[in-house]
Length: 237
Image (cartoon, rainbow, N blue to C red; front, side, top):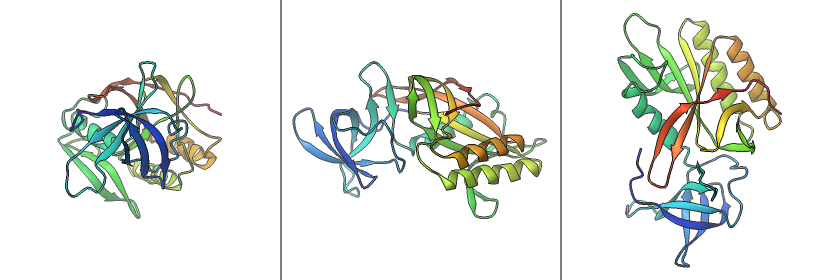
């Protein structure tokens, strides 16, 4: 998935109010960018970090830049836009490009299910159970090569796991898909020290029949594409 406009490099001055980031462009100008990430962004929002912004000329948008990438300056990148994973996964599902989730005739997004939730994707086809797919963006890494989720307490995430478990118990397929928006990780685990309730919910959901799929990404300032599956580590901090 290519970015709509060519990204420009900058340095982060500060992130604040979750969705705003003051940045300095290479020509010295200071701009405010939209940060499409409600999480803690632990380890990714230190002042002085090299980042990449996406300019826009949309008159409907108050901010003319969107923060898209963190550049670790060692050849690796992290994608910080939490809206991108669903767009990327939807395109891949419709093209049948994700092993284990291919062969369904219909891909629906944001379908109401359970008591008060919407599942990211509902896959359906003849002579096979419906497949409920929830997508999570993973950006935290505190140990080299290991991605962790979540980066902050997420009661909503735990509820999604419980909802998926209900679907599995009802005879459907239920899949939690962790998309790792980092190019420096080869495995994924639960950050139990950050949110033990979420880790427990994941373990219970797994016991209840929910499948876990972890996918990596290739990231450059030009585009983000899917990479190979990543290993899931059952034990964490």
